Length: 288
Image 1 (cartoon, rainbow, N blue to C red):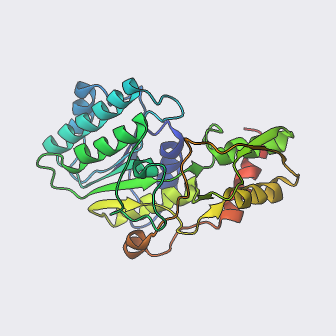
Image 2: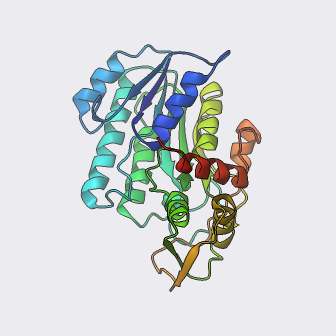
């Protein structure tokens, strides 16, 4: 059995669809909990949810209060409460494996090139601090005997992201002929991932559980100018681009060394950025 906490959110909803479509080895019942089904900030609700799970259950935790929704101290406390309640439940109720989605925001705004899982963490936002503390709570769940994977995700785009990703926002504005603003010279490097690739990595880790932290990325960062060029090609129209001053609060280059992830799962499941952008623009162009 697979259980997804946060199945009504962006990554969780895509993951549930992907797992439900799987056939052959690794297929199984998929159970999803949204915030209305199980409020992870409520210890009693989490205890009740885990009490009904068989020990063969593989759990994926996608639930979070995203920094784009609320990057406050109150949100940090709620994210910590989720992690603490999950940690206590996992320690008490045996499961097969656990995957907890974290963020590359834990590395701060000026990480070195070639970020690995051993790179010094330096969270600067309430969201990043909460995620890092949540990682520690989950990883050190008292008495937990199952493999626990911490997946540090970069910017992710794709269906159901509600245009909250920078790729989604830019794509929608280019398609509408609206202005987009790019801060700085556009040379800052980003390793964005499409949600299908993220879900494919999670599926592989469900089949082959891993103990520890993994950065999920392609390992080939593109400049923001290059990302916009891909959007221009997919949208079939030139963007109305405005250049703004450098954003002092924005992260610098994000360039990853994905040796640990590649060793675990090879190079399977990665969608080419150009193809991923085209597929996403096609999705945005289709009435839903």
